[in-house]
Length: 171
Image 1 (cartoon, rainbow, N blue to C red):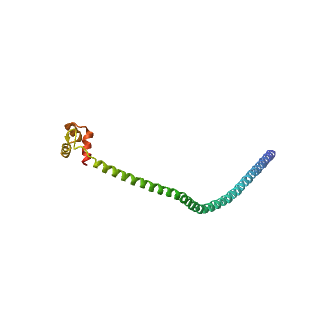
Image 2 (image 1 turned 90 degrees about the horizontal axis):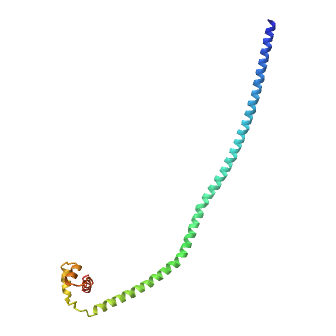
Image 3 (image 1 turned 90 degrees about the vertical axis):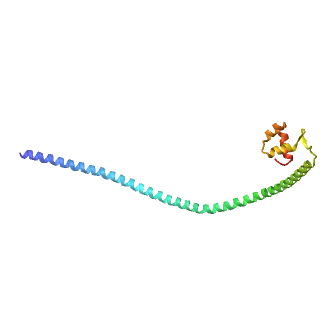
């Protein structure tokens, strides 16, 4: 029995040594992995720090640009306003000149039209058209009869009836 206990103890010792070796080996692998993870995390922290630093610099640049834009916009608006005014003054002067010219032509045309109207009134018109008195056309028109009906009744053209009414300033 001594011998079997010794074998059992040796076997147990081998198992314990084997377990210790296994644990140490696994612990060393885990440590290596933890160190590599720690290195990656440290690299990530360094990268984040650099990105944060760049982001702050770019934000400062953007802020300074935004502050300068309103000033530049104001100066651009003022410059554009001046240029528009410089360009519009000659155009406005030309338009004023054209308006004055048209005013003169309008006045001349109105004077000629008045002259022609007076000449037409002064012309001696026959007292009747096609043997009928103008009064018949006028009286029927004053009674409310339509121009077409007057023309048909008096056997005149519609244009003749309208002419009589126009001459007598009824239409």
